[in-house]
Image (cartoon, rainbow, N blue to C red):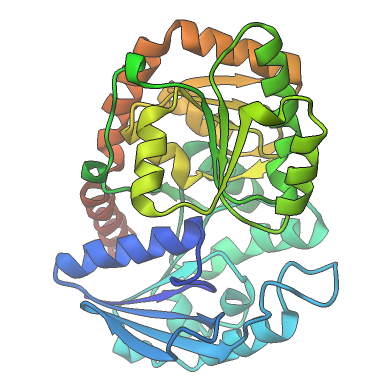
Length: 364
């Protein structure tokens, strides 16, 4: 097949959705499919057109400020979203057998012609609250041939909202890239991801302080970069446990693999999350996960669905209790992680996508 993937951001931009589509495109290409990516040129160093192995990437428009909108009401530059959507609208529908839309930036889906939407799957990664999103999440799924999302819980929410059927395509990983060390070679709690306000890392620091007061002697390592780094540094300095908290910044791939293999727990305190890629990476590393029960935190459903850790109330004391409970049954949770990760290998996930596609277009 010839497959077009329309997604707002793509490497060298860094993020979960960028990784999802970059690795999915690699696997599909290896299966013999011709893959072309259509994305925004979000930095000056990337090329407007390039070939990455057997994958062709088209980028437009050039917009280094795309993720820094002038108006605080928006998370992206609206004018760039519109230009990108109009550009995507002009893709020749006869040139491709299948179109895969990332949910974001939505405008490209809203403006897509019927000739493209009739061949399209939309990949929904987040369920958002608020009037505009409620309306769009209700009506946009019916405008395409099929819809996929990355967890069973998200599929249920979208189905209730839209009345459309959703297939589940989890976040894949190359499981062979990860290592699983025994517990005696591990120490400390880990956060790995974007440093942003909705990641709620103040709660993580409060929880860790409570854990230290209970006698926990492992460090807390926080790896990642983002707009809230300065705020996090200030929180660490005022926490009273700054000597126990390591802020590592952005880490290279091999360092990330080592952190996942040598930590005891992955802790996610996000108020808003989908099927975070780091959860799949933790699973392949035998690393149990503890997260919190916020309505828009999809990580809680992933942890519950796979049985890879615990979900607690979003309070420091409750979260530290959950961490202690998981540590007490660490070998059990680690084994469940390794077993469950096998279903998330990209070879399995890509094959599942192709079966979903065959079923949808046979019925449509």
